[in-house]
Image (cartoon, rainbow, N blue to C red; front, side, top):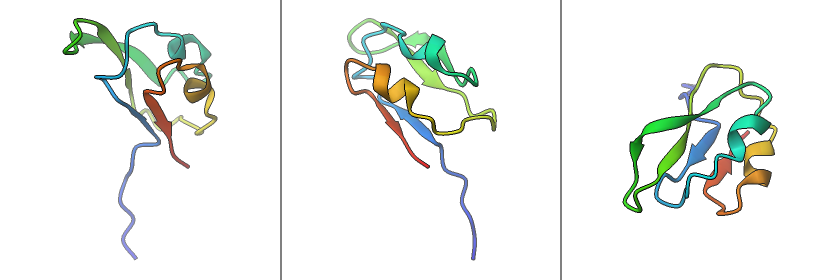
Length: 72
């Protein structure tokens, strides 16, 4: 069986309004602010795969725009 590496967190950059409530709640510091801007003119959060994500879901729970999906 071949295992493919899959991100544990997906952030929809177009749904993200840039409130960044997800950034401080991540215990493993896997989410940061992007330097890019989305179509709405907002900076957005991005997931940085550093191997530490535990799929705790804190980021998902904090996101008021449901822009974050968490996978185990």
